[in-house]
Length: 387
Image 1 (cartoon, rainbow, N blue to C red):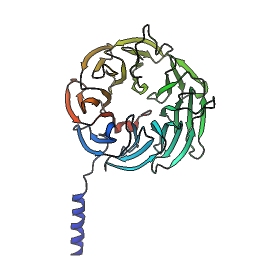
Image 2: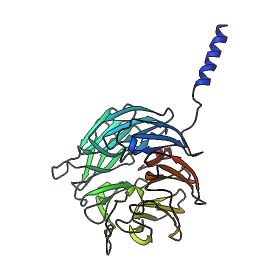
Image 3: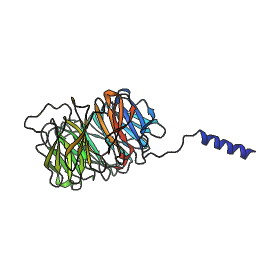
């Protein structure tokens, strides 16, 4: 009888527990105005749950653990929050600065680094416990503390980042977490505002707000120092007012070509990565913010700053021609492809919705309500360098 009761009890507990599921099709949508996340799944384009209490998400970004179960959210209020996607709950939250602007996770997934404006610097945390591991003040060669921008992960548990006021790039080597090593590259140019690491992990590139051009560091050969490329980047015969600086992480590469938003112009630049020279321009509907390739590289998707931020244009890469202009809603802030690229999710902040589109037919297939949505992040990012 006791065995029967015990067996029935186990069956009851199993029946009451949530069904097992994987994490490969999960994602998070940031509802910036309410400090909330939506947990979504891309297989059926549905919302599964919400997570509240994440603070100021007005410029939030996030990274995923390598098992895709946990996300680390970087809030504008300095908050670093670890959430469990399967249980839809906050695991731990620390307010680690007065103002932060993104972060990264190490190659082995054991460390999370945060870029801080106030006070300027980088803090590194243990990914399991969120205990502080390292605190690196961003004091440049000029002796002044700088805002940190463009924090990216690279191979070998190295983080790369830029100092805005001091005009420097630093490499933070965290192989030995008890003895962090910093390598500094001063004099890279005026006011680096954002950066990226190429998908192969080789190049760290910082865009410059105070002058034209890109500062590039070859992470395979860091002794070679900084190389300046695309010295025209930011120029134009008659530059337009810049309504929003484009995100460098919105760069895209297909084959030997890179596509990057032109600053203050209605163009996407085409660059040959074998020599880092411009080889073409694509006329588009407005000032581009993100220029993103769908997986497979055949089509490039572009969104825009005001006053054209209700549009998204699709470019055919072989012909470098716009093939369709979509109007998915008001204020399209972010685009995210499903892991294999059959669909793309678009956040329309001022329409309070996320729309889902078939990337082959270019037709809308789903709509999800969301309060002032901004970033959309799928767990496939866990397995890519620089995301």
